[in-house]
Length: 120
Image (cartoon, rainbow, N blue to C red):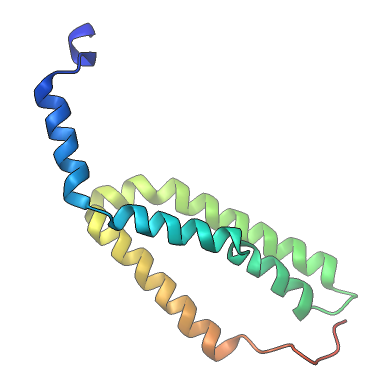
């Protein structure tokens, strides 16, 4: 067990080559993702639920939407490893990208603008 934890020159060099192979792209993706979270993109579904439902239904409908959102996040986390094994890393992130693209198309065609409308 002790021998497995020793860092050798070969293991450090191999790990450095893996990092070098990815280049700057993983860092750029992380920066863009975290910038979106900081700007509030992560909570956009929660904001939209407050605008779409009438005052009478708002608390119940919002709690259902948040529950579905949390269960979806849980499912994504639980399915990450099995999907990584079956799709490979490139296939998994390609799948995530296609789901995001479908979300953009869905939003463009089915999410209505509420600016100027009476809320509640």
